[in-house]
Every structure is written in C-alpha cells, then in structure tokens.
Length: 451
Image (cartoon, rainbow, N blue to C red; front, side, top):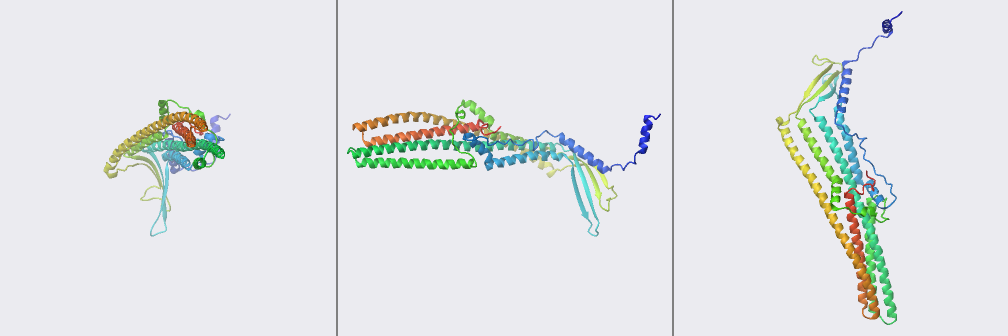
C-alpha cells in the first residue's frame, strides 16, 4: 500500500525542474507596490472623481419660472466653467492620493569618448513623510469642497438674475396692458369731444388738447413695449433661448416667512459663506503641510544599473536601501517665517468668512426693506386707483353738467393712468424682491432642479 507521504514524494519527482527564482528587483518592485497601495488605502477617506460628479439639473419644465431657472443653470457659460473647475478639483483628490504609490524613474548616459551607454532604473516608495502626503490629500479635499460651493454660488447667481428678468418681463407685460387700456380710454375721450364739437358744444382747442394727450399716451405705451423687448432679450440670453416668461409668477414662492426665519435660512443656504469656510480649511491644511515639510521623508529605494557596464564603483547592479531626504531652506528660517505667514493667512480667511456672512445679512435686510416698501406702495396705489376712477366718473358727469372743463377731465384721466402704472411697478418691485430672497434662502432650488 502506498502512503500519502509516498504519493507526494513520487509526484514531486515527476514535476519538471523549477525555474529560476524571481530576482530581487522583481520582489522589491512587488513589495513597493503593495506598500504604496496600503498607504493609499490608509489615507484620509476622500471622494474620487467618479464619486463626486455634481448632480446635473435637467430641463424638464415645459414653461414658466421653473423652465427659466432650469435653463439658466444649464446653459450659461459661467455655470459650465464652475462645473469644469469642480470636476478638476475632484480629479485633484485622486492625484493627491496617487502620491502614496511608488515612483519609477529612469535615466541614461553615454560616455564622451566611447559609444558605451548605460542607465539607471530607480523605484522609490515613500514609507514615512511626516504628514506631507496626508496634508496634500486634505488640501485637495478642501479645495474640492470649495469648488462645490462655488458651483452652487454660480448657479444661484444665474437663478437670481433669471428670476429678476422673469419678474421684469411679467411686470412690463402688465404695464403694457395698462398703457393700452389708457390709449383706448383716451381714444374714447377724443371721440366724445369730437361729437361735442360737431354739436357746437366743444371748441377746436379741446380736440387738439385731446389729440396731444392721446399721442403722449401712445408714446408711453411704445416706450414700455421697448423696455419689454429688451427684458425679453435679456431673459433669452440668460436662458440660452430655451425659455420665455409666459406664465404668471407662482404664488407658492410669493408667500413670506418671518424675517428672523428668512435670515436663518439665508445664512444656512449661502454658498458664498460655505465656500469661504472651505477656504479656511484649505489654508489650515496648507499650514499643516508647511509644518510637515520641516520633517524628513523616508524612502525605500531600489536602483538597477543597465547597459554593458552593470556595476559602478564595484557596486552590485541592483541595490536596495532606506534613504532619508530632508531640506532645510535658509537654515530653517524660511520654514519658520512661512509658518508665521500661515497664521496671518488663516486669520485673513476667517475674516473673509465673517465679511461674507455680513454681506448676506446686509443684502437680505435691504431686500426685505424693499419688499416692505413695495407692498406698502402697492396698497397705497390700490386706494389711489379706486379714488381716481371715482374722480373720473365724477369729472365726466360734472363736465356734462357744465361745472367742469375739458382740461379737468383729461387731467383726471392722466392721473388715473399714472396711478395704474405705478401700481404695476410696485407689484413688479415686490415680486423682484421676493424672488431674490427666495433664491438666497434656497427656496427655488427644487424648482430649478437642484438637489
């Protein structure tokens, strides 16, 4: 009976002769690569370029304010620029983490008096860098977060401009409709005075005065039409020609919260403040990098000579060892001054955060004040319009009774038209302020397709 041990022994005799064992260079290459991969895996957890792709809004709305906002954040070049910068920052994270891996270099040389060429292949793996590699990854991560906030800031700026242009178009359309009504009312007054002239009741000067007032109102309507076309062109440029202001403003975003609540929302949603906060982290990580640069770096280095002369100075062709590399610029004073400068940069970045927060508060309070003023004006002009409409009816009755002259009637009609236009402008100003506040607070982000 054959024992298992004998089976193994017999099988080993039947195997072909083993090949030459792997060279030391091959083993060290593998060890260096494994060491680099292990260091990269132990690096601070950061998103990769593929995992940090910004969510892209889609042009899904068919019309109205939603389509205007979506088109603005999709088509404008400034937003596309910010998207590219964010993508580059995400790739920078992978680049920083790749520094944990080994570095392979090669060089060749040829003697001046012969045709002999030799070279050197070097594989170098950092084993300990005093925190320089970790600080590089932290810098890349904070720069990515800053570019992410910058992208949202760019989108919010375009949303604010597009929403304001949308409110302007809607407001000018209302003013143009009011002006056309004013033209029709002046035409009716002109026909009235012409009939009275035919009956011998009115004079020719009354007709000329009515025609002059009608021409003035028509000119005013044409001016409003010109402003409307300019705003529509501006809106078309902001949206890449993919949206128009056809629908009225949605009432959902015209409701107001308490000023304190709005201020808290604006502070939390402000991408400019968030970007500057990430800039502070970037400066802090850069200071950590400068501090780490004062420490040496330990490498595992493998050198291999190539060419017809495999050895130099009686050294083996393949050499392995630990190397320590350190740089002390200016006898250490350069690093010392650099650390002092980093403290000043951190203080400046923190002040920039406070300045951005102050600007958010200032802008929001101004917009709330403008909105309150516009709302108050809107109520006042509503009362003025009602009063002027009653005054016009009274003036026409008194004109028929002979107690009012024709100039009084025309003046009352002009004051009524002015009050109606002022009411439309106040409504537009209130909508503009509300939309700007809604953008600052992030209320319109879902409408624009932003997460």
